[in-house]
Amino acid sequence: MSDGRDVRACLGVCDDAADDPQHRCHPQHVGLRRVGARPGGDRTRGRAGRLLQASGRVVGGVSVSIDQRLVELGIELPTTPAPAGAYVPAVVSGNLVFTAGQLPFVGGVLPATGKVGEGDGLVDPAEAKAFAATAALNALAAIEAELGSLDRVTRVVKVNGFVASDPSFVGQPGVINGASEFLHDVFGEIGVHARAAVGVAVLPLDSPVEVELVVEFE
Image 1 (spheres, rainbow, N blue to C red):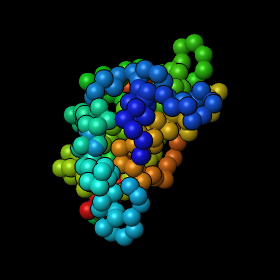
Image 2 (cartoon, one colour):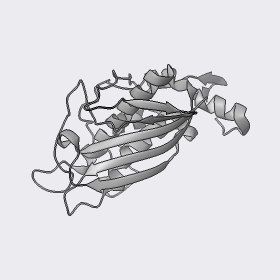
Image 3 (cartoon, rainbow, N blue to C red):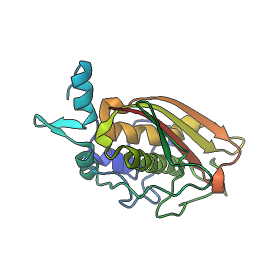
Image 4 (spheres, rainbow, N blue to C red):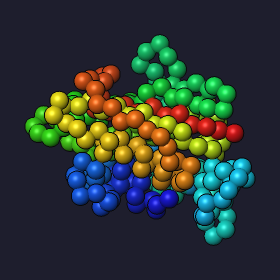
C-alpha cells in the first residue's frame, strides 16, 4: 500500500511508474476535491490474516481501519449517486456485493463528457484515468451503504471498467488503472483484483468512463 500522495495523485497526484502518458495520472484530478474516501504489513496467511488486512493496514503494530485509511489519504466518501434508471446502486448476493456501473460524478455533476483519445475535442487519457478513480470511489460509497462499513470487505474480486473511446484509442487498460491503483491504495493486498477494461462507443450521459465492482465481505 502506498502513502496518501499516490492516491491523491490519481484522485489527483502523479506517479512516475510508466513512461507512456496514457498510463500516468493527471497532475490535477478533475473533480475530486475531497469528495471521496475516508482515511485509513506484512502479508498474513489464513482467515485471521484476511480479516486483519480487511480492516486496513498495520501502522506501528496497530490495525488501522479503512475509515482511518481514507482519512489518512485525505478522502471522504461521497453520498451514493442516485440511480439513473430502474435499478439499485448495489446488490448483496451471498457474501458478495455487486455494484451497478458508477460514473465519475462529483457533487452530482460529470466533470467532463465525451470520448477518450488523443486530439482536439477528446478527453485526455490522463484525465480519464483520474475519472476512473472517482468512479471507483462512488462504487465504494454504494458498497458502504449496503454493508455499513468498508471494514467488512475481505477482497476486491473484480473490476469492470468501460471507456468511451475514439475509434483510434487503444489505451483502455491505462485509463482503468486509475480505478485499480486507487483500490490498491485504499485496501492494500486485498484490493488486488481481476479486471476487464473495455472500449465502447458511448456511455450513459456521455460519460468518458464507467466502473463497476464486485467485492467479497464477511
